[in-house]
Image (cartoon, rainbow, N blue to C red; front, side):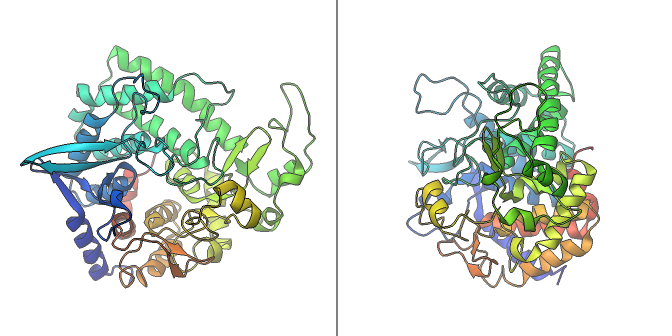
Length: 456
């Protein structure tokens, strides 16, 4: 079943059917083929979603569509600071775009969040774009694109926006609710792990690309990147990390401390620690917290941030091993019937009502609130293969392969153990199929993992 070519072929058929052409060239894949009438944006090309499709194309040696996507989104990037505060700032890549045909002419219409549910500009689009650019160059060997003015200008606009000063004494990005894959209100406001790990990877990608043929101006940007990365890495590795030893330390925190050298830097009250945490982190395991800030530790497990930290080596070697150990011990609740939970545990009762705004789509164990997202299969298998845990990778893909094709490639699954097709999940979800292709490709050819990883 691991090398089920029939299921892989079905996934590729879905990607091919979802491919969009613009001015005679393939430029991306739409979000889903079975869109329905109440979600018109599913027929758009999302930067976040296409990252997974793009990775599938790169691993298959299909470089041109990825190159075209990178150039089209670069053309759509916000290049000027608008005086209109209801428009996205300079440097931001679009959340999505669509090809419009009228009077035999084609044009592109981008959305930077001004049409989105909740009206939030995506923080992650620019960061995924940088990772995909780095992966395209590594896979194709096309270093010439790194020297192009368009590429360098796009990268520098992103860096100018993401490296600006802020009213904080920490190196992470301040992020509103709904600004990344968890794109609805979920109490993520602050410094969610998924974005902070992605930010680190994007900075390292920028450094690699600008360093290929660095001009004097490029070197100045590299210096700015180096200054931020060191602080960011140290902060996440130390302050976000939780294991039995650190949990014991936090349990004995004193509060209302003032000064430079104190243990409880964020004034965390022990009574705010949820009871489930004490039983959930066994010996020789650990993970990065979902969020941290003044008076707040969010102990939720965010899958994208933790697994990406394994791949990029933002997590130290011992931390990488402990994250995989946590997955093994908590396999039933994190993976269950379909890999893998986006966020664990789900918000329930009063917490769900207050933190989600009583969002009916994000009810407990559904959608982003504890739902299972098969597109993340690629992250799980890539992390497992990097850590030489092939048994975990095989177990995950066989679990997914039992249902994905038969269920017609749903967007997400519901239920505490991911055993129900999502109540409002779209079928023929393209990044679900792409995630399976990537996972299968990595498992079949482990050397391809090098495209995704960074040096320790």
